[in-house]
Image (cartoon, rainbow, N blue to C red; front, side, top):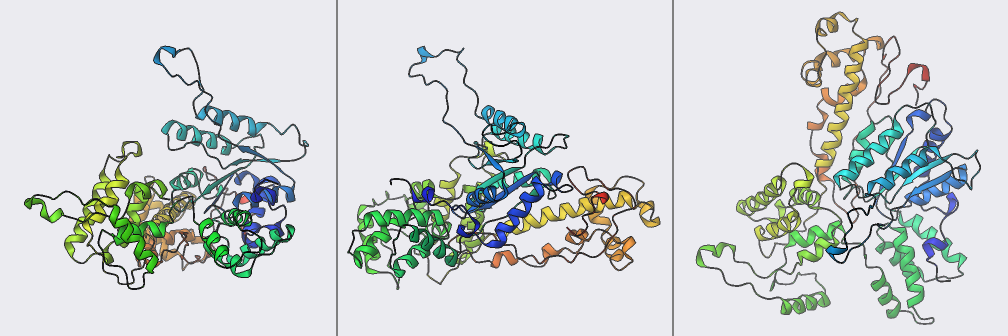
Length: 541
């Protein structure tokens, strides 16, 4: 059978999934509320599954579809059906080819109101968006957002829920924040899938091999799991290639050589190694490291022989004289898992330990500032050469060779600060709604002559809101006010101490806030952007 094992042995039950049971239960609960929940159904409109590639996001949805009995209508991008012209004279202005976003809009409109003709009318269905259109294009992005908004607006017609799957959201996926912020926290759910744990992956691979009556050595399987970086799809593909490349009866060095060749990640450089290539700034003639293997030393010598020395500089530019770099910026740009804006955040977080004096720090920060301001504030005005300029500028500013001091890489604190800022904005929104309902309080009544702006709530009501925390429940403010009145985001940069591993997954270390009793108001409180109603009777949710 020439079929790929990832398709041939696709999991069909929860027991065959290599995903943590709590993650599966979280997604199952959301589907149950979105498809059959009476009071919660209107709030369960968009489910966003994020995480690195090969962590079981799509498989989890398909397994739950079989288990819970719902159909999946999936969008797939197709090649352009437009006509190709080899000569300007052949061009016909009357020929019409649909734009990139028109087929997607048509699909979303039909999928939200039609059913699969091969399925029973009683079976509900969901819309699955994994192969997203090119949302970096302004027109396509606007159409994409409008299509989503049209399906989450209140309607008398029961519309199917939408599931969006975004791989590597922690690296490239700025669109994740846009989709998540579009409708508010009450209408969206964002489970983040972590890389598959070695124990779960080993169990899944052994179960698949049992179906094929194959049993590789334990060392081989352990090495395969260790080099997969939590990507079970990559592990299965490598296992299939190994079974084809390894001849029966030959073990040992041949087996290890095949495994070393097939476990190289083809989808791009891991973020950890990308930063190392730039920040360690290796150049022609640099001495080898103390713990460097002999074969790696020989590879560097062979590479140095292929590098051309740069032309000599005049005396007044001697400070910019550098040896030829061993880093091929074009190659790392083609394989990089992140864009220039995210690369600048990681360099900004990590560059100072690699510098020896303040002038070198000034040089790197100068390039970071230039990249931030390059092209203006809009993404479509950005300089397309920012990645090269940032990489080359950083390496030009760093010392050569960079002293080896056991450097560690850390994740940017920017993401944690940004999430806390968004949560604080939600807290301000809750307080503003509470003020409108609680206007009977004498102190607040005197302050509500004009409608409170967000800035007024933050700068003027902190003491009042904290004082009400010690009062009776009838007078307490929403507990979310502590997100901006306690200034918790200024207590230290815990995120800056979170070490960067082989796979970058942002893990929130923020403790859960204790939810005290508070009374939201005497009447019905209805949030326009998807809140809750007292009549829903879901206080414990």
